[in-house]
Structures are given as C-alpha cells and as structure tokens.
Image (cartoon, rainbow, N blue to C red; front, top):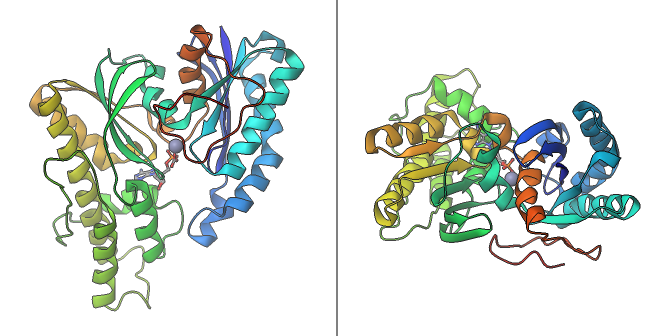
Length: 343
Ligand code: KG4
Ligand code: ZN
C-alpha cells in the first residue's frame, strides 16, 4: 500500500511516498530557511507564496524518487493542522485536487500526530503504551500514547515552545533562523555550567515554561552590554551562553519526562519534533534511559524536523480504519491532537 504524504504546515514544503506506513521510498523537503533567516523568524505570507511555487515540483520529485506514478497510490495523507493557516491551505488544496482528479481517498493528519508517530519509520519502534515528548518550534507537550489515534496530553508549555526559545535566543545572539541547529553546534564547545540560567520545573505538573529562560538570556546580554555589539561566533563567551542555555532547556525536558515515567509506570519513551534533533537532548534522554532502565526511542535526525514521511506514516493507520476525509476539508491553525479530523 503506497501513500503520498504532504506537509506544508510551516516553512518547509514536503512530500513523501511511504509503503505500508513504515518504509520510506522518498521524503523530499524543500526548506525555506534562506528566505526567512534574514528576518529572524518565519514570515507567514512569504511562506505561503513559496509553498505555491514548490508544491508541484516537490510532489513530482517524491513520485520520481520513489520510482512510481500517481496511479500507484492508494491514498494521499495531508497535514491539515496545526500550523500557519496560509501554508496549510496550499497543501490541503493541492491534496484535495490531486485526490479528486485521481479518484483516491484523502486522509487528514494532525501535524503533532505525525511527529509522535515518526519513530515508527525506524526499524526499532515502541509498543503501546508509551510516553512521548513532542518538542518543536510550535509545541512542547508530553503525551501518553495509548494506541494509534489515542493520545492523552499530560502537559504542555504554558508559554514558549522549546524550539521557539532556541529561535528567539538565536535572534538575540545575531545567529539567525532557525536557531536550534546553530546553538546546538556552538554548545558543543561551551561550558554548560558557565552561566546559571533558570530552570522552570513547575513541581507536581507536567507543564513546561521557557519564557523565563529566554528573558534570563536577554537580561544577561543586557547586563554584559552585548545587545548592541553582537558577539563573534568564535568567541568563548558565545559558546558558553549556548551551552548554558541548552543545558537549562534539556535539563527540564529530561527531568519532566523522567518524572512522567515514575508517575505513570511506563518504561517506554519517545522524543520527536525539531528539537529532538538536538544532540544534548538526545544524549541526556538516552543516558536517563540507561540509568533508569527505560527504553528510549529517538527518530533519525532527518525525521525530527518537519517532513511528509511522518504524515504518510500517521495517515496509514487512519487509512486502514477507512478514516477518510471529504473534499471539503479545511485546514486549522489550532488543532489539538485528540480532536476529530473533521473538515
Ligand atoms: O518540528 P519542526 O521542524 O517544526 C515545527 O513543527 O515547529 O521544528 C522546528 C524547530 C525550530 O524551532 C528549530 O530551531 C528547532 O526545531 N530545531 C532544533 C534543532 N534542530 C531544529 N532545536 C535544537 N537543536 C537542534 N539541533
Ligand atoms: Zn513540526
């Protein structure tokens, strides 16, 4: 069974062909980072315009790399939210027209479910139930995944997502967008104990908070008069700031997950979403797993950030249940993972 996945939820145009929800035949991601980096964040209007330009070539390339034609497809799985509404509209409109013209079913997939199930594209994947930390530019939530399509949100960020904090701190440091990969790289050579940035542990809650940490970095830079004269990316201090900030983010993410393991008695954990590409988070979460006897599942780096293979993988399970959507499907900027995929 071959599904075409499509994701245009944010600033990447992606199409992928996945066989039986597990085997990736192609996974094309056209990044828009070069367009948005000079603004220090995504400009929604520019993102939608670029999706319009890229959607047809990206789908063509996905079919070509998979070595199939559109008539070989059983269905299309498209992300209909959450995300930027103008961006989502392009993917959804394209998918509806594609399905209508080929008379094949359309499956709507929640972007967060895509991230959550991305570990199933790896050869080693968890059994249900498991705890799942979805940590990206738009979301930071901890779920209890009971089965396909059954997810209980245990906690979420009360303010900024972890990836958003990375992007904002990167902007403060003059490092551009996206901030995660560059801060991750700089952190490698820095001292994580150099600056004692705050950790919001929010006791007795599975919620997160990262806005105080972001403000603490801003105050540090202001105190040291570093806002007007940006640091050189080679300086020792910028490495130390990156490492200390990253340690604060990672400590909270891992500590909360560890607490959920203890409270819920579930010894299987997955991490996914753009921030799960972070080397510090991967290392510390795997270390926690080893120490506490918890199985930790981490997708390969290319499956952490936005991609359509995860949408096709999640869509496959809905396809098997004949959970199709009508051609009147509408995208939703706000779409909780447990809401029905109504149009
Ligand atoms: O999942 P994703 O591609 O898009 C959303 O659904 O938001 O995540 C993008 C986010 C950005 O905030 C980016 O800075 C962050 O993931 N990110 C990272 C790393 N790679 C991407 N954050 C920390 N370390 C990384 N290596
Ligand atoms: Zn995402």
